[in-house]
Image (cartoon, rainbow, N blue to C red; front, side):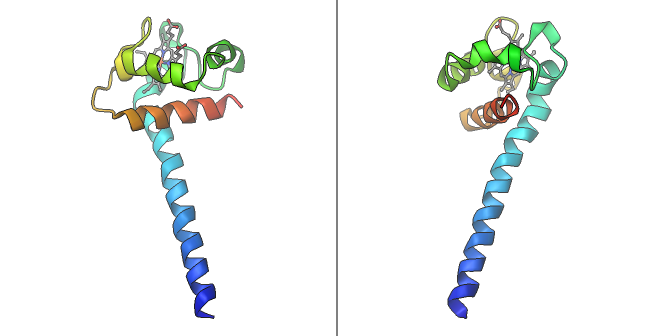
Length: 101
Ligand code: HEC
């Protein structure tokens, strides 16, 4: 009985942690990236616009991460939010990539 409760507890904790991680990327996207990527400002590829993202995704997620960290074209480094860590940027990128599937 006790073991079952312990397993259930672990399951709930693990599940919660995943939910928080997933939410972070979405929040960071909404706070920093959506300014351009929601409406295609300055020709930014729009969120969930598969045709716009497909050719970019071919270069691989690592290359895209570098683009965001260093900036590309009209996109400033880290989307203009210097306070973001590399992990924050990666989480936002993961969120964007997940919307193209
Ligand atoms: C000021 C507007 C702006 C903001 C804010 C912005 N982007 Fe962009 N983003 C662009 C534009 C414009 C491009 C197209 C750049 C090009 O190909 O010349 C782009 C391209 C990209 C690409 C494709 C890069 C490549 O190598 O093809 C990714 C990935 C990306 N943005 C992710 C993000 C993420 C993640 C954030 C938030 C942390 C973000 N962007 C914030 C304007 C923006």
